[in-house]
Amino acid sequence: MSNFPMLPKSEVTFLNKLHEELRDNRNKAQIYRTETEMRYSVLNDAKFPTKASKYWQSVREMEVMYGELIRMSFKYRKNMVKLKKFQKEFEETNDELEKERLQVEIDEQLFIKEEGERVGRDRAREIEHWSRIKKELDDGSFDTTNVNTHQMDSLKKQLEVRESYLTPVSNEGEILNVKGPLGTMNKKLEESKNSVPKNVKN
Image (cartoon, rainbow, N blue to C red; front, side, top):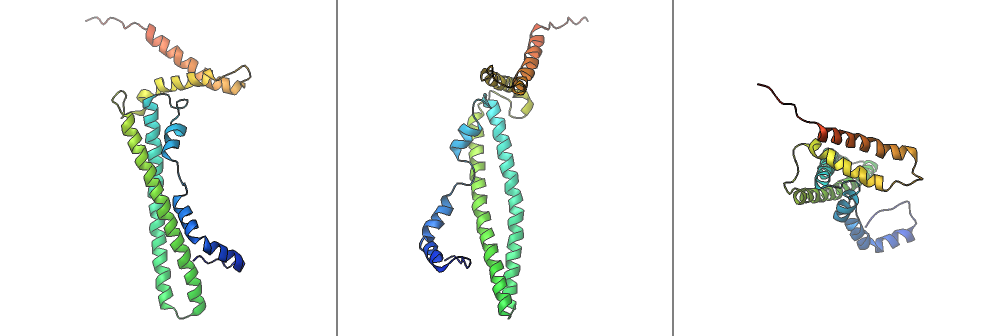
């Protein structure tokens, strides 16, 4: 049972009766994104209109999640050292007040340990989803080694989608953010299409 000394006895009794439900609730509460959110909220067609753009966004999302998992592992290991230190001090002291203080420290570190494990598992779950999504998207139709290769095509399509949502009441900044880069891209593509390679004389 949890210890809540700041609460009246009636509230503690009520919470203790809900112990199993609260435990179950904590175990199944969402921490990071579900697979549905990853596929349809993050990788939506407006922002990522091509398989290549979805793939490379998946790479970025997976890398962020993995980096955070590594940073978490350092915190977890430091916490375990603290926990062992408090447990050792608890065993060695005969001072009752010091034992009481150390027990609070131990309880806190055990909670941090449990929370780290819960969050770590959910980060690992999301990493697994991103890995699977990347494999699904990789159909051999785009470059998976150089992020820049796809960007002209993907960004142009993204801007065209955004352009279709512009209205007469769209603000100037919003219009410039779409029309500016889209116009530059179209100009570059037109120049590339019209350029004729020069004959090379031997």
